[in-house]
Amino acid sequence: MLEPTSHYTPDPTRYASMEYRRCGVSGLKLPRIALGLWHNFGDDTPLANMRATIHTAFDNGITYFDLANNYGPEPGAAERNFGHILRADLSAHRDELVIATKAGFEMWDGPYGQGGSRKYLLGSLDASLARLGLDYVDVFYHHCMDPDTPLEESMGALATAVHSGKALYVGLSNYDGATMERAMGILADLHVPCIVNQNRYNIFDRTIEHNGLKEAGARLGKGLVTFSPLDQGLLTDRYLNGIPADSRIARDGRFLQASALTDDRLRRIRGLNELATQRGQSLAEMALAWLLHDPAVTTVLVGASRPAQLIDDLAALNNTAFTADELARIDILAR
Image (cartoon, rainbow, N blue to C red; front, side, top):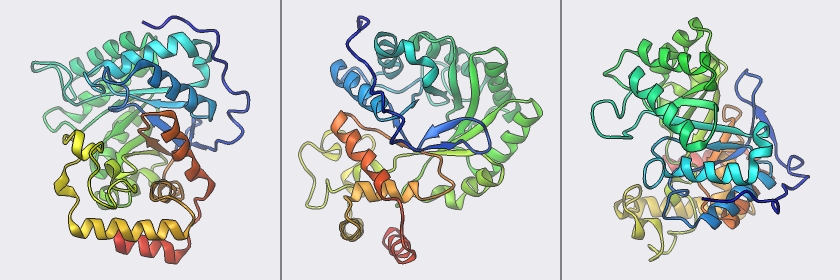
C-alpha cells in the first residue's frame, strides 16, 4: 500500500502543450494522447515504475486514464494499483482527471462473470469502484458485444450506472457499426449520455473502416478512442532485424506471436519505416501521427510501460500532417 506523498507536485505548465478535443458532440474534452493500463499496470510491474509513468502522463497534460475490470495481470490488479497511486498522489486533482473502466470480458468464474447481463455489468462496476477507491468513474464502457443478452438489457444496465451516479458518461467498446447504432438509439431513448466508442485501429488493422463503426460513430456525433496504435509493437523499429530476446513476441506470446511477422509483413514494416525516416519521425511516431491526423479520432491510447516510452509517444504530436502521396503510400503498404 502506498502512503500519501507530499513531494509530488504536478507540472504547472502541464496543459500548455497538450491538445484537447471534444468527445464527439459532447461537452467532454479528452487529450489527444491518453494512457491505457491494459497489461502494463499489473502486479508484475514495479509499483515505483507505475507511479513514475502516471506522474509523467499527468505532467504532460494526459488527463484520461483507461482501465477495465480484467486488466492486470491478474484481473483487477490494474484498477487496484492505479487506485493506490491515485489516492497517494493525485487525490487533490480528481476533478482534473477522466477515469474510465469497462466490463464485458471474463472477470470471474461462473455464468455471471462475463457478458452483458445486468447482473454482471452492475456487479462489476461496484467491484471496480471498490478497487479504484472511487464513488464514480467518468466513463463506464460495455467492453464487448454479447449476442446472448438482449441489447436492451445491457444498455439498461449502463443507464442504471449513470442514473445511480456511479458513472458520468457511458461508452461502447469493440462493437460493430450496426450494433452500435442500435445501442445508441436505446441509450438516447433512456436519456443516457453515451458519448464514445473505443475500438482497435491502426495502420494495419482497418476493421472499423469496414464494419461500419467509424462511419456510424462520426455520423451520430460520437467520439472515437483508439487502442493498439502500434499493433502490439509491429509498427515500431523493434522487429526490423529479427525478434529481440526481450521483445513481446519472445517473452509473451498471448497477444503477439512470431507467426505474425511474415516475410511480407516485414517488407511492409520496412517500407513504412523508410517513409517515417523521410518524415523525420520514428515508425512509432508516424503510426501514432497517422491516427492523430484523422478528424474522426478523438484520442489515441498508448500502453507505455515506462516514462521514457511515454515521452517518445508524445513526440508524435509534433507532426501530424500528411501529404496525399504519403497517405496513399501508407495505404499501399498496409493493404
